[in-house]
Image (cartoon, rainbow, N blue to C red):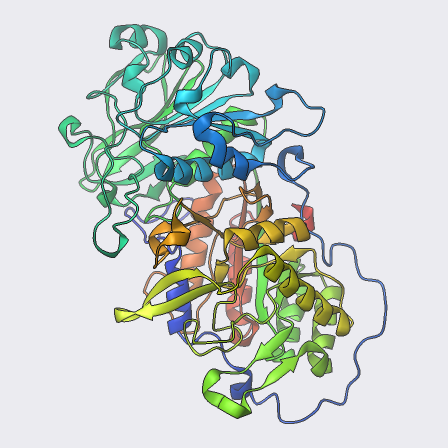
Length: 602
């Protein structure tokens, strides 16, 4: 691990959806029976009616002044026809929104993946409008704050209106990936911007997935056509002096044939495994160009952080540096140990650290217990409830973490026990303990989800606790219908979202159609939820990988995310692990310059 603001020179595995498999295999979630907490009925009484501290249940304000639930999902679905729009605040002007043009020549699956990723990231800065590239019309750039172009199809034809508006400087442009070579002739481009592209300047060549992930064939985020060669074996991107990791298997990236440093400023450089460097991001005039579509947050790299920060230059250039942090105590259900919970809360309060905590209202025991399988409610555990009240009174914000954090039926994927299994999505373990996502829960619908939430909130009220306004999806997986219900019912969501490509409902497994994303700041995602970031992962009881699930990896990620000038970095922690590692992570993050805040202060 590097010192200061540096980090090891080389790629680092990004957890993505795979952290769940590690979590479930590590034995991290300890059952209530093994803690011996159900030996008898507790004598203490539940707390009586009372008022609760400010921020004890509230989430953050919507980013960018978005006071209404936007239509980002409609924007992504309708973007290929040019109809999609993430609507501005009522009474606002079109110029309050950012235009995102995504290549649509390769069909709806590729379009939706990249439209979703880009719309989610850009939503931090306010309303967005999403269109297919072919739907661009004259004057659109001038009627919006800026244009983000996502060039990931090497067969896309740029509308003449788009080329004219960009070259005429009608507004600021962030150009991600290919097709820069079709904007104008090389000589005219060089005279306008002071640099030339290498090869043809075309977009990535789509490479079909192989093996179990053969459907659908999604494009790699930065790969140029093999005939164009480009820069190969790129293992990192150096931005603001920090080497952000990149998986070389993503393929080569576009190169620059010539660059005049008096007219074009290099913002980031690509670094190969053998030490070669080339420009990766360049700014000149109204155009900021990035050599690849680096928004693939679920891949084996964190170069998306550079794009996340470049969006500030495009949309909020006066933003001062600020680095905020979040910590969430996890899986506090009826099976939890109240002494461990109170110890974690006491530690954070002593350190002056606001925090949040995820509450599960009902515990269901493991399926192998058969007729002896237990069902325990929060109200059956007065001592536990009083520990939760202690958290509320000492800087804690309560988050609803599902209803039972499991689904009755076959193992999903382990043993049906609360905290172990998925609640809102079907899964199983394949050969080699690979976690496979099979589809929505049988009977899933908006009405089913509404009822599940109603039951959970009723249990919380029966325990004498306040009603949470933040929801955390168990194991970060639910159907789009479930996510939309959550957006209607809660002020915010606190997790990493799962997003789907067209046709996911007609295939099993669903894993190839799922895409996980988080942002290094608060966003309004395509489901309509304000999303609080969890970007650092967790500490595992027995890490299954050398580079994941430890305080060191959490701190490594936190250090990398400092390249985003106004970021929010969050991790979660299970109280039964004790407080030593919790205190160590908090202290080290503070020494990096992070300030811990409550979700409502974001």
